[in-house]
Length: 91
Image 1: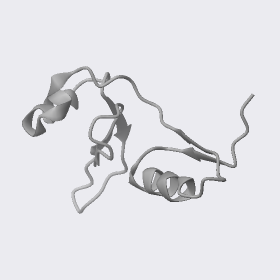
Image 2: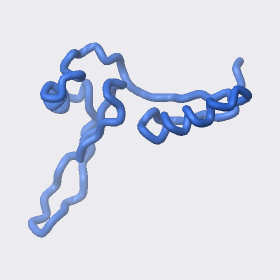
Image 3: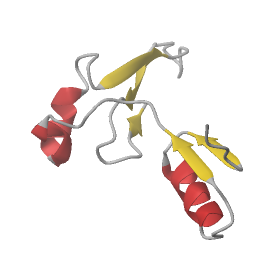
Image 4: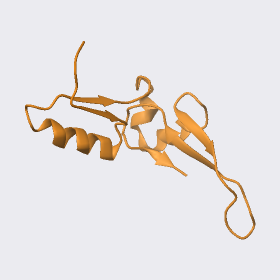
């Protein structure tokens, strides 16, 4: 079993910076955890193609949001499920 000094959950922008800075000290054992599948779909790497991956559930989580604005409408937030191009979220 391996012991770690720091366990960072989430490899978004802040998680990666934190892991990088903590790992600069050779005495620190840092574990960075991220949930997500392989980035096999080439559309994930094309700016215009990424839009098409947001439609389904394979590459994106769809979160309901609260009604906002004067005409109370509900929008769906979306966050990426893969490693390609982290960080990636839209609301």
